[in-house]
Image 1: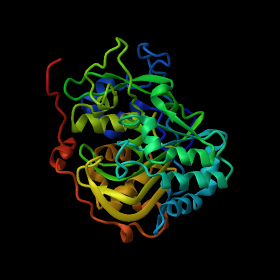
Image 2 (image 1 turned 90 degrees about the vertical axis):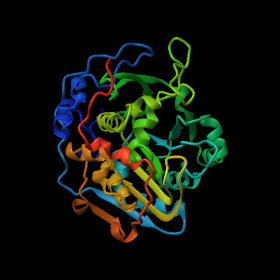
Image 3 (image 1 turned 180 degrees about the vertical axis):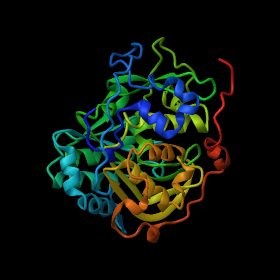
Length: 378
């Protein structure tokens, strides 16, 4: 992985990460050296991880987070990105831009990334000369290409001359994820494109949503869980994984502890280079699919994904300390988590915050705060 900045959530020392987060006291510590990405070749066994590297030094400059609001979704996103033009252009460098939407539905627009949000991103990339070879890539819950068609992505792709990519038809890597029920790692096949951050600049194009498993979902979760693919088992069957053979449920980890551990432990390898969180219409209640619309008209953009998600949670009236994976990443100093230390470009966060209704399962979601216990024998 090319080192970009500590503000890109880059952690190369996973053992150190576990110690800093306190996860070493739980079952996850048993696999501290085994939760690295595995063989590139499909179907091969996970490789032994490379020797730990020194973590990237934190920048002395405060994390910048652009926060815009207004009555036009596309314009909100374009203006937010424009205020970070220098940082974004430098960070992209010569890498290919990969825009990863969050299409948890391919038929219902509200929980999915809106084409107007992508238009704001594409228009900005065009303005700085970084649109060549850009792709919009997704592994949706349902037919990815049908979702692209249903939500108007094909028209957008034609206009900006970008390629639409179904990640389920591209290369993959096999990694290991934690499961709290028996403390045994599970194999997960994830997108090789999203895992290759040396050659690809990953934009997480998502929205503000409450969630029925991890309190809230924003830019980090869109990349980590969204990287898992829908593929048949090597034996040719679907393996009873649910979601039509998707490996995504494996990252849920068997409960509140497992999913938060997986999100935090895999973020060093699978994270956004740039977070673009569209809150023009948010979702509250039983997200990420069955929630209800919130008229919010905001947008958050940052090259520091932890800072972006922290601001996003605060905008929804959620204490980031109640979100397990953000708490773990904050403890590991995988980005900026202190609002007081961020440079907010735009309106104050408090001025634009709203109180979102949380999912009905919130009591179970907060069990990540309790001591983890294996719930079944192997």
